[in-house]
Structures are given as structure tokens and as C-alpha cells.
Image (spheres, rainbow, N blue to C red):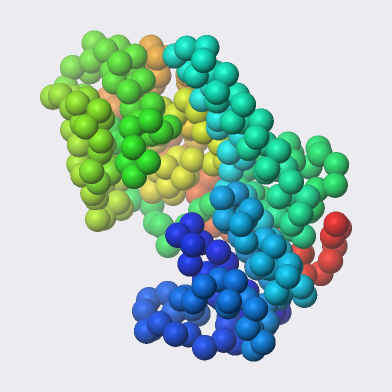
Length: 350
């Protein structure tokens, strides 16, 4: 279908699929699956006379802005595809609404407008784009002069439903990472759950225990630990963790795109209680697969029900299984191969 495809990853490396260029690093698990890691300076690599790409996929805005001109200059025949993991300006807008004071809210609103201008420009400069959220795709499609967009739900094909029954499980799980520090959607969500939701939950289920994943949580986050809140640290086997948990929470109050923690909980077959933002963008295909509540007391009540009622838990589990089985049979247009086929065919190209 195409000679070569290069994707610019979050860490700045270039990942080249189906390459016709020499791989300069030793083979590893990625390379054995057809992925080459380009170790040289990106602009130098793209400018080489023996390097030709049919498409370049650039993920996230902070990567797109500095490298798009390299692609246009050195690989003029390549399709420039923007992999929009999220609309970051929408996340900043939500964060501004939660700001503690007016000065901070104003600063965030200014940052959101600047980011919005940048992100909208990327959708106009790219030849094609991929998002993970139908809602965000619709927002962009409403603008003038933007490129065609495909929507791909970020499921992982290798994740299988966990097998333990209700009685073989215990506890509530919160899957998070802490590289961004305490002042992130993960940190804000955990603080909100501990301060606003957990007191209600303790009244219903005094023995409740929240297990929080993630290596090296910041001191401000570790300070939330108590008999009802346990920090797991780095979890090497998330499938095993999900198999031990009765309920997963996604108490996210600001963010954008699709929350992978919500998708992964569903793929592992674990009932999840989420805020509206935590469930945003997840295509449940009309099935009642996620408990979506924003009010702290109602959030606590839904967690308590799924934590203590085996019939409610099993009913939700069966609905989740129905949804996940549907996700495993995606339409061709909802896969990366389908999106690339559409991009290369020139259908509705800008």
C-alpha cells in the first residue's frame, strides 16, 4: 500500500513502519514487529537523498509545530498526517473553570486561546488527521479549511477480559501516572475523590480501600494516603491488578480526548464509575457500560453499589463484555489501516 511510513513519537524519536532505510540501532521487540527507530537528527534524516516516505504521522501539537516544515521541505511527496490525541485547549478551558482565583483563571483562559489557535492551524496545515473522539472531530469539522478526519477509538488489541468473579475481587482501583506532577488531571481527580467523595463512601462502606497505581507519586499526592487510600507504586502487570479490583474510578474533572484509563478498564471487564469528563469520548454504542456521575455523593453511591452488590456488578460486567466484543470487530474505516487507505485514496482530500 505504501513504501514507508514514519511516525514522530512523544519522546521525539521517529518510528518508521515498513522502512526502506537502514536501521542503525540493534534489533529489539519493536524492530522485530516491523518498526525501525531512527536515531539521527530528524531534519538530517528527512533530507537524505535515499530516504522517501509516503506519509509522516506526527502525534501531539508540541511535536507538530517544530517538525511540520521539515516534512514539507524535505519530503514534499509525503502525506502529513496529524495524530490529534486530544484538543488540548479544551482541557485548559476546563482547568480554568476550576481555578482557585480569578488571576489563575484568566492566565489559563489566555493559554487556552493561544493553544486553540495553534491546534486549529495544525488541522488546516495537515493533509489528514486522526482523533480518538467523535465529539472533538465534530468540533474541528465545524471549522473552515480543515483537512479530513478519521476517528479511531484507542483500544489495545492485546488486552483480554479479566476472569476473576465478584467474590474473588476486592477494592477500588485508580490507574494513574505521576510524571506530570501533582497539578495534573490525575492529581486533581484524586484530590477531589479523597476530599469530596470518600467521606460519603466511608459512611456506606467503612472498609473501602482505594488502590492507586503509578511510580513515584509527588509528595503532595502521597500525603493523601490513609487506611482507605493505598499507593501501589509502579505496577508491572496491570492485567493482574485489574483482575483483583471490583470497581475502577475515573474522577477526572478536566482533560480532553478519550481517557485511556476508562477504555482500558472496560477492555479488562471491570465496572467503572467516571465523571462526565472521565467518560468523555468513549463510544459505548448506546450500551449502559459506564456509570457517569459528577456529584460527589452520587459518585460514592454508585461506587458502593458496584463494590457490594454482586448482582449489580455482574449485570454491568455483562454489558461491558458485550461492548468490548463489539470493539474487537471494528469497521475497516475505524482502524489505522483504514484511515491510511482513505488518506492515500485522496477521498475528500483538502
